Image (cartoon, rainbow, N blue to C red; front, top):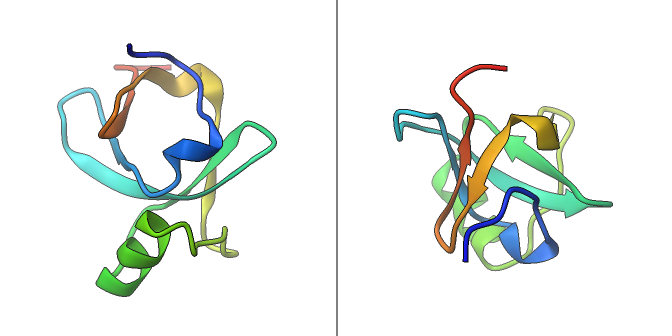
Length: 81
């Protein structure tokens, strides 16, 4: 079932825009906020999928109002905010 909020289980998921283009990956979920690495390298991607990530200084908080849906595979953003 799709939802529009993040949980700890969403760490490592791809973040895509409304057209389906990947724009980053969730590196950490802290207090209900997803932190997104907009340019993850292979090592960062593997670390976040394994739950070994952590938000870095260059990671961006994703506001819940921007989220359209969260699926098993990705977090899809709304068209516009």
